[in-house]
Amino acid sequence: MEFQTNVSISDDGEFATVEINPDIFSLEVIYSAAYTFLDKAYFIFDGDPEETVKVKLKPKTDEVELEELTKELQNELVNYAVYVIQASRNQGVRNAIIQRALNTNGVVYTDEESEEVEAGEADIIQDEEGIAETWSPEKSEGLEDMDLDGIAKSWTPDDMPDDLEEDEEDGEYPVVGDKVKVDQSLCTNCGTCRTLAPESFELDENGRSKPVSQEIDENVKSAAETCPVNAIILEEE
Image (cartoon, rainbow, N blue to C red; front, top):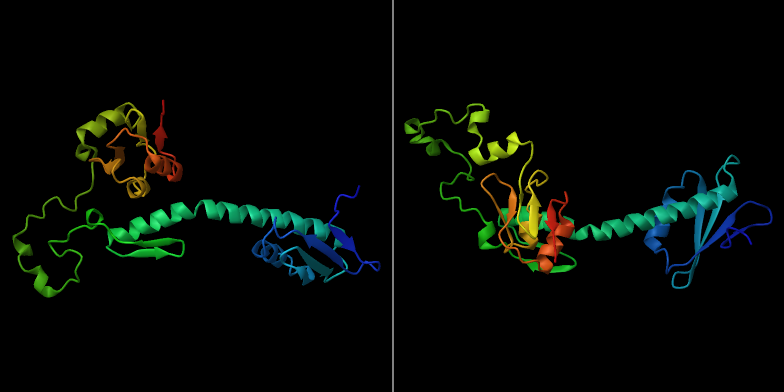
């Protein structure tokens, strides 16, 4: 039995034909795999994209071994197929991060696969002092009366909250919760959990996420699965 049953080489050894099943490898994957060998071979695509895609390749130089080139092409098909699968799995995480970033500024975010998502009132920071507005000389009025002492001073260990200082003395940060836990030594406050499960997570006084409910529903499970640092731990009965 031949190893490459889907490969045929011409009688003169000038070119090879690789037959590819489109149900296994999409045209996107096939084109991407062939693109990586443009410096080594010429390509012609033929066949029926619904049944069999035929890729004909001819080496550009005599130094390129034709049979080895067909094997490398099929390895590259697997490589790009895995890339497409991973990109699809991570799409939800990317959308959640983008939605969180845009919602913070009150921007409406849409993508091709989901309906319009409007920024919630709870996610919009009220700027009553006009800090985010463009500065003008008129805004400096009254600054001379402000007590600015200590605002720009360097941080020291004395500024650390007492409860956090006690945790750091033991060399650990707390894991908050019973069934739903958040390892705060890993939490980066990316906001993914609060976006996917806003009723179950909030920020503590140290700026890290913590559970406010011990109910494990689908939103909590989704937040645990998409947490980029795996800081959410679920202990189901």
